[in-house]
Length: 150
Image (tube, rainbow, N blue to C red):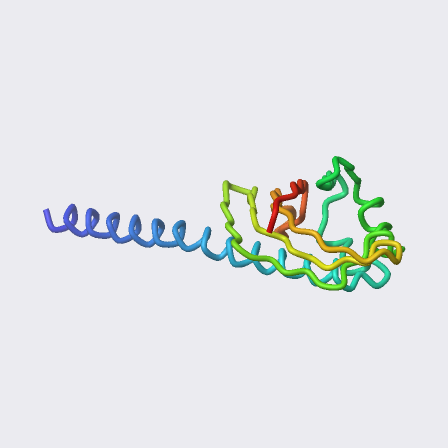
């Protein structure tokens, strides 16, 4: 009887530990996604030669703009590096992150001052991003923007 009781207690403790580990993993992933979103924001604001952007996005990237234009990875990075898409400042707010297995859905408000091809402007967007965990790293798979009145 004692052995059965000890086995039952051990099984319950193991279940609790496993459940706590499973509950902690999404919170850790949420922070990792928040961090990579911030790294992307910073890299878009200062793209340099695109070196900081490349590891943040998947080769299969589908990057949708609010005007309907959709870019692949090479087009997205080239537009930033060339200055065709130039951000003077980018502010993100109202961010939500939802993790579903190895996919993260991120929504936020994106307000930026731009200087695209030397033409100053302002933009206020609602953004939907889809991030995929690949080889232990979160990478942007898809992004879509829509305009709104700020």
